Image (cartoon, rainbow, N blue to C red; front, side, top):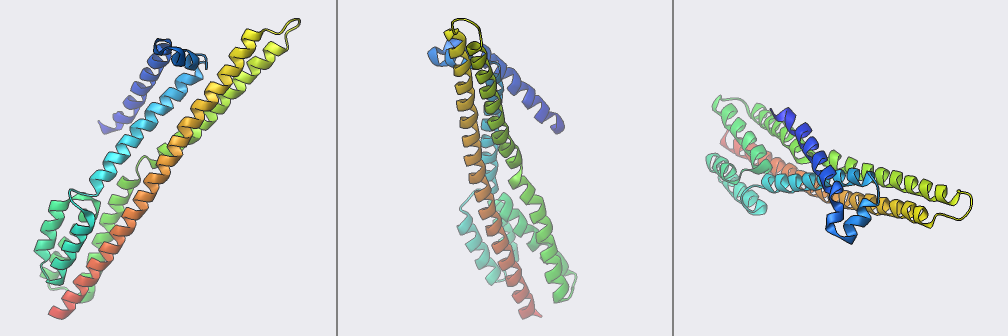
Length: 246
C-alpha cells in the first residue's frame, strides 16, 4: 500500500495546483497577475506544493529522529551507565529516548549482551558489537536523508520552468513587436508580464528549496557525526569493561 502513497500524493498535488491556478483571479489583483503568467504558473504551483510537503515531512522526521528528550543529556546518561557497567540501564535509556541515535546504540548494546552471554572472547565481542552498530546505522541514515534529493530536484526544476516561462513570454513580446504597422502594446505587455511572473515564481521556489535543502543536509551531517561519536565511545567503553572483567 505504501508504494501508492507517492503517486497518489502527486496526483492530489496536481489537482490542487490546477484548481488554484484556475481560481487565481478570486485572489484579487495579485491572483490576476499570477494568472497572466500562463499555464506554466500551474506547474510552479505544483512544485511549490510538493516543496512545502517535503519540507514539512523532513522537519517532522528529523525532529522524530532526535528522540523524546535532549540528545546531549541522553548521551551523557548512557555514558554514565556504561562507565558503571550498567548495560541494562543503558538499554532502558535507549528505549525511553527512541530516535535514530538511541536505536543505533541499543542495537550495539543488545548484541554485546548476547555475545558476551555466550562466553565469546573479547575480540569477537567488540567486533560483533561494532558490526551491529554499523548495521543499525546503515538502516537509520537513509531514513534521515530521504526526500532530500527530491527537494533539490524541485529547486532545479523550478528554475528551469521559470526560465521556460520567461522564454515563452519574451517570444510573445517579440511577436507583438514584429507585426506590421503599429505595435500591439497589449500583447507586448502580456508577454513581458508572463516572462517576469514565471521568472519570479521559479526563483522564489528555487531559493526556498536550495536554502531548506542545505539546512536539512547540515542537520543530517551533524546528526550523523553525533551518532558516530556516540557509537565509537560506546564501543570503547564496552571494550574496556569487557577487558576489566576478563
